[in-house]
Image (cartoon, rainbow, N blue to C red; front, side, top):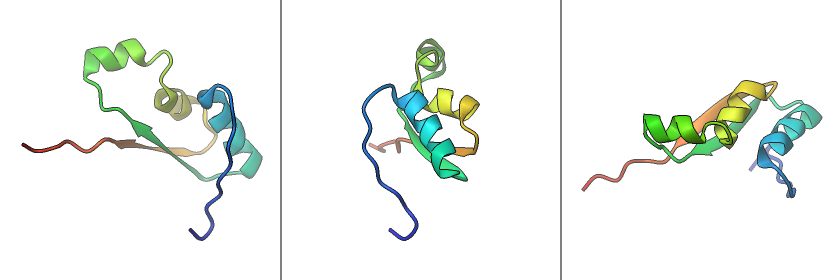
Length: 71
């Protein structure tokens, strides 16, 4: 992929992602979301990677939701 970077790190994903955004002066960070309901999302928001990055990353953050499967 042209212009994309790939690196592997160990540790707390929340702080690592925000640090790497700063290190590379990224303009966009794309993270995934599990797509939980409102109550479960509130409970896990205290350690959610996507929520943390949305509030702390120094760039735009795109949160990509898991697609719903139609039956």
